[in-house]
Length: 371
Image (cartoon, rainbow, N blue to C red; front, side):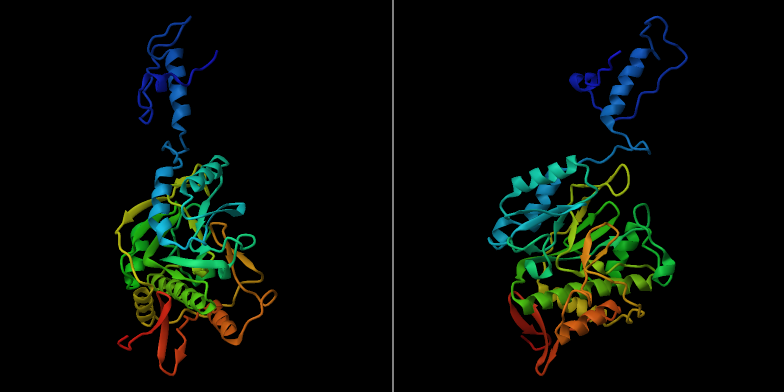
């Protein structure tokens, strides 16, 4: 017998509803198509196939290309970015991915759809734009523009292996409210957007203008600010008894794209935008808020560095670039900064005879100097 799974769609009846309760008191006999008959079972089988139910009986998430488009056009608009820069889309086990000019949104969406059809566990976008000529997946020094500051707050639950004994007894935040409190208690402004990654929350602070990263000094200053944000969130989380992973401090960081499916656990969970404020920030004002609030918290306990090579895997499987003595040579200031960071000591801005300096819109400004 052939089961027709298209009947409900052809009839125009909705499929996303609770399955009908079958009356099993009236058995089917010799082709009887009454209530509880074989015909009812066939009808229900077609519905179940179309629902794509998961083990909990909840409807499994699917790719939402409209939300992908909305995120790309809002956070990375073509008229906002350097024409020479590219956006890099990558996926689990396909970290090199593909690169797209800021205006190639349709091509980017087609590639995201292709990765989704392949059932990739995660589909990501590099946070910074990058040099189109960079080899491989690109490194921090291949960054062209910074468009936002970001955080990645993992929540306790499936998909996150976390042993408090390995993190000074600190646990992962149990829920979204706790994750939001970590950000609030850090003294940070409400982010431009909250994104549920399917396993945690991203808070992202969009800049009012892209910050150029092609100058080595500007890139180093921007990396310091991104790193200090991670240190601040870790300190805030620690006061609440929770762990925040600071591995997302690198400028080559990739984050899940809203509208895609997080398939780290079966059958998958939606990565989606849950709140937008529309706020935009200057890098200078965010840097100052981060520095002032970081000073309120005690330094993190010193832990031995765990990096033994070029990459360290974060929970989501995305490689994190870490320098190591085996494959990098440092200038003295860079080496000191790396050692302090690996030891959990908060970074501080460079001090000159005339004061401390932060990057802002391609120029330098001394904080507390009255501009």
